[in-house]
Picture 1 (cartoon, one colour):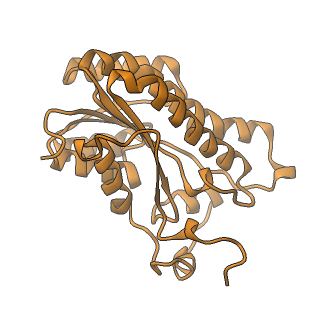
Picture 2: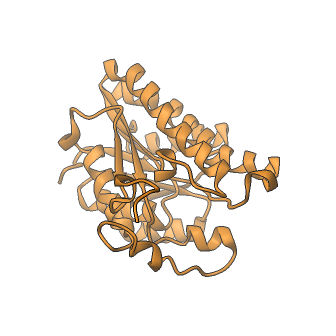
Length: 249
């Protein structure tokens, strides 16, 4: 029960990586609040796990205040935050509309900033905590046709380090997780059609696409005291995607 006594809020938790993290957290003894904009799926999963659900648009300052207050009423001060919610948009740099760029940044980057800011005081009151920011391999290196997404994920990587420096004296650790190709609906939904991502897996050192559980296990490690001396770090969960460079093969 590595999270016994922890109060955790997970964004984008109705499905995919967020849902996998919620399952692992609940199994490890955390009191969990799931948040999302997919209310039916979020409510159903929360009921299954014995957790609580709160609607949250992560780009909303007022929404964050309400989610933190909801969690405090249900379980007490937040001691673990997983900033997992994110969206993807494909387009060439020259064809990217400002509105689409801002939409991605608002959810991915601003949402993470607002989340960290919202839990700083509750975690200080609680005597410490852990913030896990889900970035991407696109927060470590660029990818064509993902200018907005890559910008937002690099920003998360940088904000993580600033927050780690500022919050460390209060016993609050802040780390970023960088998933690679994971089997979730994100790519297919961004392109508006089903996409077979299995060929990508054959290019990786581990020769497979990642599963949401692969990411959840690393998030669990960072949320728990097993990672008590880890802060400001970058943890790739990518099957070896970032172990090489463009000249390979």
